[in-house]
Image (cartoon, rainbow, N blue to C red):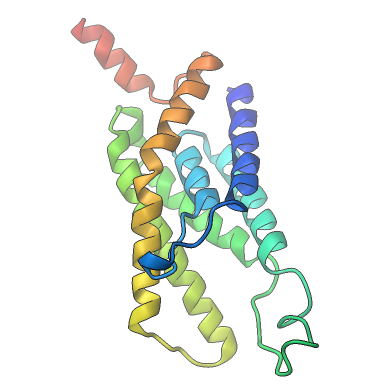
Length: 194
């Protein structure tokens, strides 16, 4: 169990590295695959509450370190009017919220119904993006909703969700490598049928 939990943390760290090489797809409303969020969501449904919270902290902390640090509002030589930005640490809460959502469907996952978790990962990414966009607009002092932004969030969520079977396959392989069962009820049911 501990080895599998450490493997999920290493997988999340590897997702941060791989995320740097994934470009935005201009043909799909500048959507992108949010690999870090996807790996976190898939791992969150396979681990216990404590490990999920550790993953949420690591993922949110590093996501903010990657995206939110730097001069406030951008380089002052380039941006003459500083833009209000989110404070460091908000992503930890958003990752935690997504993790709690995935933990809620964990009983279905343990029965071997991983496809529900794959579908929920797309919904969770959409909710994550909507929450982040709402918080940004609130901090900036006004809510602006346009069609292009909605299409970008929707296409990003769908594109990210399409890669969830690959991440679940990787997690099943990792669990087998460490002799850890991430869906024990499905294994018991298979043994009874055999």
